[in-house]
Length: 127
Image (cartoon, rainbow, N blue to C red; front, side):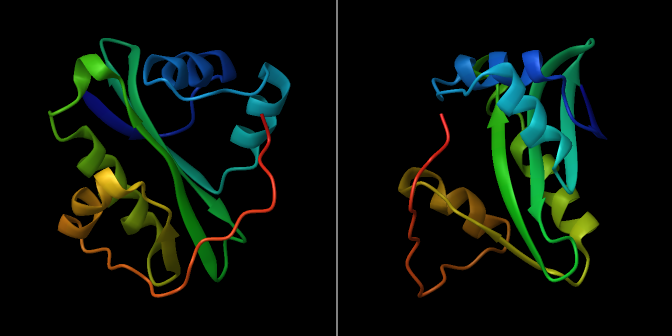
C-alpha cells in the first residue's frame, strides 16, 4: 500500500465516493474540483485507488481538508491518518481547517485537531 502526493482521475474519484455512499456530481464538475485542489494525497493498493484526501483554499492563508475517504475494503489500516498527516505537513504554518461529521470527530481529535467554537454555515451544495 502506497500513500503518495497526487490526485485521482475524475472517474476514480467518482467511483471512490460511490463506494462509501457519498453523492457525486457529474464528471465535468468532479474534474474541475480536482483541478482546483491546492494539493492531494492518494492511497493505492497495487495501482487501484484505495483512498484519497485533498486540500482546497487560497493556498496562502487558509486551507481546508476535504474528501478524506478510504474505500471500505481498506478501512482500519491507518490510511486516513497517513493521508491527513501528509496534508498537514504540506500545509506547513498555514491554517488548516476541516468539517467533520460527528462520528469522525474523535478520529480528527486524535490527529491534533480541536473543535472550533464557530458554527458551520452553508448556502447551497453542488450535486
